Structures are given as C-alpha cells and as structure tokens.
Image (cartoon, rainbow, N blue to C red; front, top):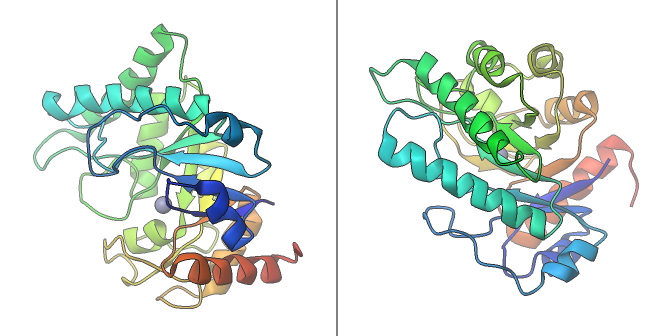
Length: 260
Ligand SMILES: [Zn+2]
C-alpha cells in the first residue's frame, strides 16, 4: 500500500523524499485560478520517478453547475489538466464532485457530469483516470452524501470513472466512517485513492478543515480502518508541512504494519 502526501508543486520529488512518501499529490496550476497548466520542465524526471504521482484539479472546477460560465470553462480546464497529468505520468486526476446552485435541479447536475465524460469520450476519453472526490459541504452537492453519490454513479456509470474517498469530507459531510467503504463500494464498485485526513469540524458540520491524524474530531483508528478496507493508495492532505505530514505517514505505516 503506497502512502504519501499532498505537497507543493515546485519540486514534488524533493517533497516526497522529505516525508519518506511513496506517493505525492500536487496541483499543476493555481488551485483557485482558471489558468491552464503550463508544461513542466521536469516532466521526464517525474515520469521516471518511483514515487507515484497524483494531480489534484483546481478547486474552481465545477462541471455539475447549471451556470454555463462556470461549467464550460470547468470542462475545458479538467481536460487540460488530464492532458498535463498524462504528460508527467500521473496515476490519476482528482476532481471534486461539484454542486448546483440553490434552487437548481440536482438531476441536471448529475447529467452535466455524464455529459463531461461523454464530451471527453468524443475525443478519445480522458488520458488519465479521473477520480471524483467526495466533498464536505453544501446542500446541493453531487458527492457529499452517499444518496447523491448513488445518483451521480447512475449518471456516469457507463464511463470509466474512478473514486477518491476523503475521510475528513465524509465525516464532516455527515457519513459515519464505520463500514463506509462497503457502502461506497456498493455504489461505485471501487475506491482508487483514499485521502486520509482528520477533521477540525465535527460530524456533519459541513466544514472542509483538515487536521493531522492524531488531532481533530475523528478517532484515528477509524481512518486506519477505512484505509485497510479500501485497500487503495493513501494521500494525507494534512497540515504541518514535511514534519506534520511525515508524522502522519509514519503513524499510518505503523498502524497498518507496512514497515519502512
Ligand atoms: Zn481530499
């Protein structure tokens, strides 16, 4: 089981070494911006690296929204990131489930997700696996709670779609972690990546505020149980830089008995 961290995009391999991480996730552009990713000078070095690479798409992306002025550029930015992620040999592109605005029909949001994959399929499909991540907040989210996730998967299930399970988002979003993996897999059939984070916010608080594994409001053993059940690679998106994340990675290796 590969365990790693979300790191700064400037030199991801140095960040991996600083944490003894076997995997890293990073952004390819400003996560709050709409700029397409620039080609990376270290692409060949990244492709050849033994560390597994994951790319997190910008937070501004929302392919579900009924607002054309957000949805159309979101789709384009997602495709641009998928191409750039493929260029560096990334194992997957993580993107949040998105939401529709208050008063808008969530069914249209799910159909917009379907159209995103159909649109990509027209040009040969996404060049890397796209992993949709569950989110913590909002009452009109596509992937906050499992009832919505089931509707999302009904819409996109004909395409090759991966899933990234974030433990902070699940808990703060109002899903108990006990047996969560079984309930998710009953819907998606797969979990491709676990974001192992504790939560500063309480259960069902809707707050997306990550904490180190031994901090926060979640029993860390529950996070470990989720990882064990998922059997997927793990990325911690926790505070504290190399020291904080390195400690979280060491904690997980110890609990999971994966040595190193
Ligand atoms: Zn996450």
